Length: 231
Image (cartoon, rainbow, N blue to C red):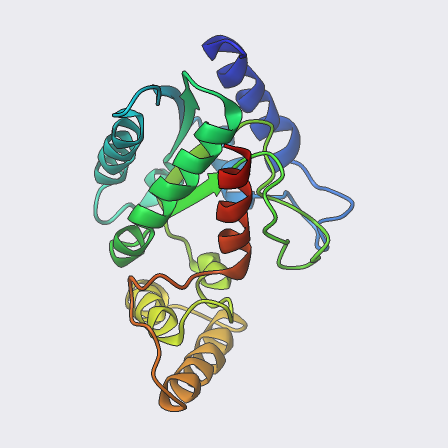
């Protein structure tokens, strides 16, 4: 098992060498994660370790993540928009850490979005495909980690995956529109309108699970099955 300092140090190096750099397989220009690129440039990203060993390990990560979400505040402005907290679980094997990260992300996702925040999970072999290139894997990190940050206008791309239940999509789009709708320009305003119409059409076609239901992105379900199989 790698030491705590190794896990945190290698994660910090990955943030700078991968997430904040262009990639040939990304499918668009710019950094893999423009938000993290700006966050690190402004010195707004906080990286820390969380001990997830023992029966209370998952609760410790969830509590730390909730605290980070609260510290982001309600209405970030200026450079504060780029505040981010990256939590690196330590204290147990990689498969267990990945499973804990995924469980906590799923637990906090809906309430975080409702508050205008984003919670993201990363771990080795994460199967979620890139938006612009389905063969690219932007969430595959060298070690499991959980990241929280304020929602930005481009996050609509992550709120409208077709595999998200339509009731959830509509709830997420309501939050996005309340924050950015009045100032959104094409293509974001157009994406909002088309995504909302699609979700409403699907919702009217038959019973669907509402927000907080067990169905979620197919790739995240696959990820959960995979990390639990390895745990």
